[in-house]
Image (cartoon, rainbow, N blue to C red; front, side):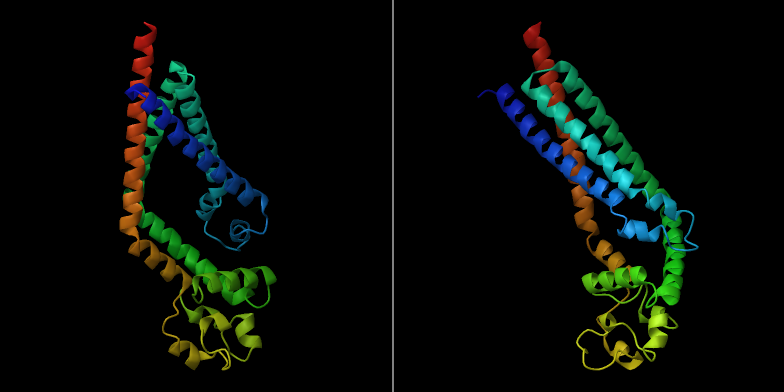
Length: 249
């Protein structure tokens, strides 16, 4: 197998993976939009939620768009390499180039408008705490969502256990917190004293934020790796394009 054949095979395998990944993301996006009981559907029903939150609720459409784009890129790359189609390879190069430019622009926007994102999270935190105090223990949807979130992430409340003070659950259970706030103290009631002793438990938002901060290097490495792969894909597509053009000349 010569260099040209090797590049064709690598182009096919690489874009085959992209096609499958795009199909998976597309499926998740469709599921998010169809599943009315998902977290995003719940967030959209929170009263007095920040107006900016409506942009976050479009993540389902974003996943669908990204998935569809990856499917198209994977299809063009695979078919362009197998059929030796210069048109498909050129279209593949243009789309990947546009995606690369958009990613660079997005990274710049995130860095520039990071204070705006922090302000949005603060507004959402206030709304989430108000929702807990109003509906936790009374609204089955809110209660079930928070129970699932706290059990999965091993956290308590949005910021901490004090978020539950004054909630219907807190009032109806003689000033007790949810059992997720007191892991290891199943027998004893989860009151203020026991919750304070459960030092390993923190709020869900601080835990997620710390998780992201602890994995900043990994996230940056993944982003850099994706950028390198995109550059390599563009280079290979142009090499194949020029080689096919010279062979047919």
